[in-house]
Image (cartoon, rainbow, N blue to C red; front, side, top):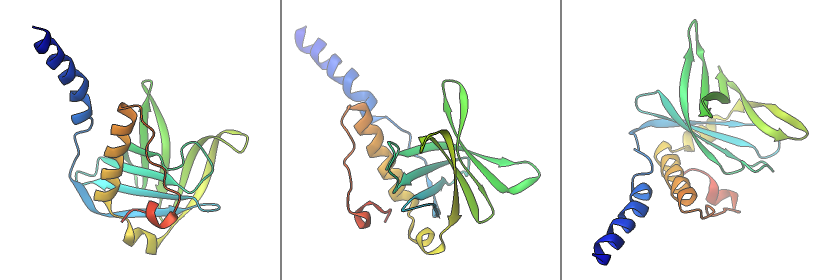
Length: 164
């Protein structure tokens, strides 16, 4: 009896880690946008084009290296504008919006601003090196680390931290 209880408890603890995210099929190409200093935002859509993984990197901020799973919203009448939205506490939080070759990143509590708007520009070379499958894998690892309450591994070498 004790063994069966222990086994059930182990399954209950491990099950959420094994099924933390239903990984979708990812699109073939991604995009990269650059901002001030070393800031780079990587974007990778899923194949259905209704969600995207976004990675913020190269900024002195608690969200440096963080990856978001976002909803993709195309603006009616403005097909060149794309909003990337995270739902938090039943409210939409705009993380990023893209309009043509530029973008705006919304970053909380940055340089004295409660919600900073950071202008970004498209990076063709870095976009061709962005690999959606690798960003999705990084997101899976982040989820597993958060669920296990273990900090995600930090990457200090910029070459190692770029999507491959």
